[in-house]
Image 1 (tube, one colour):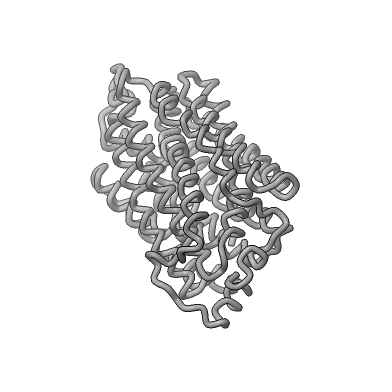
Image 2 (cartoon, rainbow, N blue to C red; image 1 turned 30 degrees about the horizontal axis):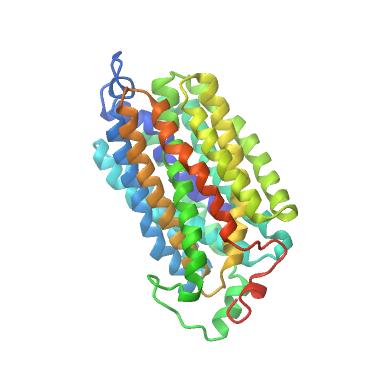
Length: 402
C-alpha cells in the first residue's frame, strides 16, 4: 500500500515541483515588478491552470468507487499504471495549456490510487493499528512527492520539466512488483461474500450515511482550500519570487521530510491516545496558519511556514484518515473516500482560482494568503459534529453492514 502511494506521489507532484520551470519555459521572465514579470506567467494564469489540474481529480470519484465493486487490489494496480503512463506523456507538452491538459489526464488515476491504498490499509488493520497504517500510506505519498521535489531542486535546471516527468517511468516499472504483492483486504472479501449489492458509484452512499458524509465533505473542502494553493504555488513563490536557490529549495524540502515524519508520528500517537477528532482539528488549524505564514513575504516566513504546514498536515493525515475509514461500513468505504477526494478537489480549485486572482491584486502573495487561508481556521469546529471513533471498529459503529 505504501509503495503504491510512493508511486502516486511521485507522479502526481510533478506539476507542482516543476511549475516554476514550466512558467519560465512557456512564459517570459523579466525584471519587472508584477508576478507575471517575475514568475513568467501571471498569478491568474497559474491559478487557473492549477485549478484545472485539481478539477481533473474529480475523475478520482468514480475510479475510487469502482473499488467497492471490482476490488481494492485490481483498482490500485491499473489506476497506478494508467496515471504514471499519462504523466510520462505530459513531458511532450508543446505549450502551457497543453501541459495543463495532458497532465490533467493522469491526475484522476493517481488520486484514486492513493485513496484506495489508504482504504485498503485501514481495512487490513484493527483500531489500535489503523492510524499507524494510514500514516504509513501518507508517508509513502510524501516520500514520492518529496523525492521528486528534491530531484527538481538539485538537478531541475539540467533535467527541465520534461526530464522530470520522464522520471515517472521509474515508479511505473515497479507496478508489476505491486501486482505480485498486493492482497485483497479480508474485510472486503467478507463483505462481498455476504451478498451486498454492487451499487452505482454516483449515489452509492445510502441515505443513513449521508449526514456524516456531509460533514466529512465540508471539512475536506475546507482543507482543500488551503492545500490547493499552499502546495501548488510554493515552488513558483520560492524560486521565482523569493529567488531561493535550487539547493536551498531542496534543503527546505529535505527538512520537511524530517518534520513530516515527526508530524505523522505525533498524529498517530495523538489519534490513538487523545482521539481522532481533536488531533485532526488541531492539524487543520496548524495547516491554515502555516500556509498564511509561508506567503507572508519573507524567506524566513516561507521556510518556517512551509515546515509548520508540513508538520500540521502530517499530524492531520493519520487522524482524519482513520476517522473517515471508521465512520463508514466496508460496502461504501471506497465510494466515501471518492466523494472526499471530490470535495477536496472542489475546495482546492476554488482556493487556487481565488489565491491566484488575489495575488495579482497589488502583486504580492501575502494578501492572497491571509484572505484565502485564515477563514478555514473557523471551520475546524465542524469536527464536533462527528462521533469519536478511537478504540472502535467499523463493525461496532455499523454492525449490520460493516
